[in-house]
Every structure is written in C-alpha cells, then in structure tokens.
Length: 328
Image 1: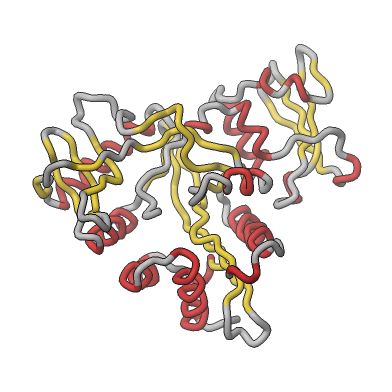
Image 2: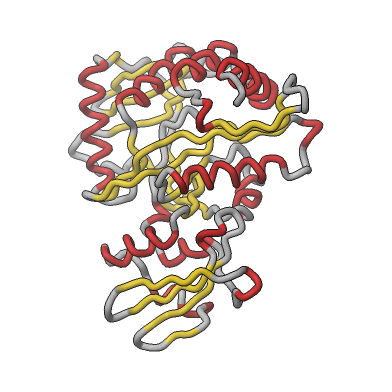
C-alpha cells in the first residue's frame, strides 16, 4: 500500500496541474478533506508521477425523515498527455464499487464543463435540476456570527429536505466551506433578511455561492428547479427501488414503454450496469403488492436492458436532488 504522504503528494500534483487551484486551497483541502482510503490513483510504474485521479467524499442525503449514504465524486482528472485512454472511467468504476461496498445508495458529482454531462451519462449518471441562484453582491454584507449561521444552516437544510432530496453537510464540512471562502476574502454575511455565503473574484467583486432567505420565504427560493446542475447515479439499485416503492415515489408507468412485459400485476425489465455488475439482471415490480423481485442474469442474456441513468425517469423526485456548497 502506498504511504499516505506519497498518495497526497501525487494527488496534489495532478490536482494543481489540472484545476489550477491555489496552493492555499490545495493545502486546505488536504488538511480537511483528503482521505487516502477513498482516493484512487493511477501512476507511472515507478510511482513518480500521477496519471489519473478520482476521489469520493462521503455525505448524507435526506428526504423528509429518510436518511441515506451517498458519495460525492471529487477531483476526477487525467494528465493532459494521458487523456483519451479511459483512465478516469477505470477509476470511476473502482470508486463506484467502493461506494457500493460501503453502503452508498447513490453517487453524485458536478461536471466542470458542459460537455462532461454527456461523458458522465455514459457511466450511468442522470442530470439533476436545481441550479443555485448566485448573484453578484453590490454591497458588503454585514458579518454574521458563525454559531448563529450554523443554526440557521441546519434549520434551512431540514426545511429543504421536507420538499426535495437534499445533500446535507456536517459541521466539519460546513466549517471547511467557510475556510475555503475565507481564502478568497469571503465569508458569511447578511443583506436585508438574506444570508449570503460569498467570496471575492479576481476583479474584487463579491460573488455569492449560496443565499438563504428568511424563514418567511420558501426554502428553495435560491434554486432554479428547471435549470440543470449536477448529476446523480444509482449505486445500490435494488435497495433504491425498494425504498422508492415503500415511500410511493416510484412512477412505475414511466418504465412501462421500454419494459419487457407489462400487465396490471407486474412490470418486468432488464438492467445492465457496466460499472457495478451486481446490479445487472432482471427486475420485476409487483404493482398491487408494491414489491420488487430481482434475479441476477449474465449480460449476454439481458434483453433490451435499461441503464442506471434511465431509471431516474421513474424517480422524478430524485431528479430534483439539491446539491450546493461543495467547494466546486
């Protein structure tokens, strides 16, 4: 096993050359967020240089009174002279399998560029809708005490989760967000009744990354629920479907047009998951009993299979999973 310090050196090298982040940000990330146990690296044979990198960070998601584990794909990158060889796809598969073993129900990420939505769709990701509204601030916000701000943040997350699946942040993750904003001369402050999380850009303008309105206004006001932002991938598919059936969240009729067999009692379909083979097989949804049956099948015996991203058409509530404040 590669020593932690060596893994850190290699990941910092490829992170710096790919994303162009400052040394201060990379040092903060390494100190607060980096975890070698969840970092996947491909290197040269002598391990002197990183060729490709993917890391996943554990989060909790919440919808109403339901909580589940999820993994956030962070820093997926390949050295410029190694691109086009499928290295990131290999590491993404390793990350997905690890998340599956650790009990994550789904994975999520934020593509850095528009073309990456198509790239990640080929690995089972579907587009989310709920882009944050992040206005430029024309005046300096009044600083807000961190203790008071954390209480507000917790309350706001809980209110969001009453209406939409929501990525939640622990106190440690929230403090790391504040530290990253402070690197760019930002922080938390209020203008009127709205609390802004903000930083200063290269021109010295204050750019907000999150706006939390007063309790009198809808908690989802800072989001445009029709605009794409981020992607989500089911990982433990049988568990996810069972959960959705029990909560009456699965719109079974959305699966019917492409299913192998449909009658008033059941919907039968095959699914192919090239990243997590354990998910591949035949699924049978019993409509009246509201149960799921699953039988593993070899890929060559699958008939017109669904892919993981196509399942989200039957789970519209998950398409509005709210992702925010990820230091992206």
